[in-house]
Image 1 (cartoon, rainbow, N blue to C red):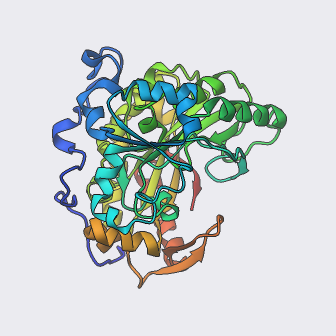
Image 2: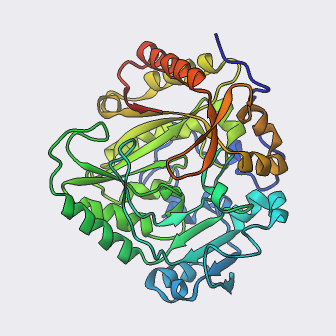
Length: 403
């Protein structure tokens, strides 16, 4: 039986904000190609297309002086010659952004028009063991998209635009040293049987970052030369420019998927789900390993039927070569009291689906945050149902882990 909730998504579920990414009028048809002669060939790089400018139209930059003076900082600013720049002492402490509750009403506009440049001082690689073996020091924090359940803004408060770290050379050098120190992988694990997997996009979306600078390209190039490891990042945005990076099998792209009606309400400013699915074969042919994140699974009336329809669509449209190498992560929704309160200020309809205290409980996460998750019994029962749906509708889609 489907789990009830306070509200459900519909095709008209977007919040009423002028700056939202236009789905119908900007997305190319799912059958369009994404290569050099595909839908964006007329513009050269996709980052120069009207669609990209609708996603990220930077009009204000906050930057640490050292970030501005770096080669990557100069590259970024060369693309933004007329943008106002405000120098700040720390990318984490910008009073007009962080902790300013007046920004809730401008939640999406800030993501569209504001960029932060900083230097990542702490370079550390953490063990993971779920999606990846290791979490690498990421090249960014924050995102131009506005998914209502995103965990990143919980630690920033009231504004969450992209922060790009310009000391990419130091980040790449750290990752190379760490990979080489591990040596070959001697024991198969669910992350990957042969290679050490490094998540390079924990706190951002590498596909969106690539609209602004070459941090993503530099990391893909670095892993191309590391035969014992591979990079991995999840994305909800189809950026055709990534097809030209020649990963040679050393980067795993995880396209995040959920039923389309849920995505219209919750995945604000992202590429439509059908477009993400349609891009899978192009990315595989360009040299990426392509997996899928079935994430987050949100319990609402009809959720099982909606996921069955999505899995049927995957089975119908994905070519055999994608299915043969695909794997999936199944991740149940995690929410947060502070984010719930922020969302009530800019997108209350999302909270009708996300905030369900009758079936949720608090739990402290691995990083110490106090979050809200489905009660253990509800979660376990729902994961069992998801596995059954996969076995019935997409038996070829191996589950690497479910959480």
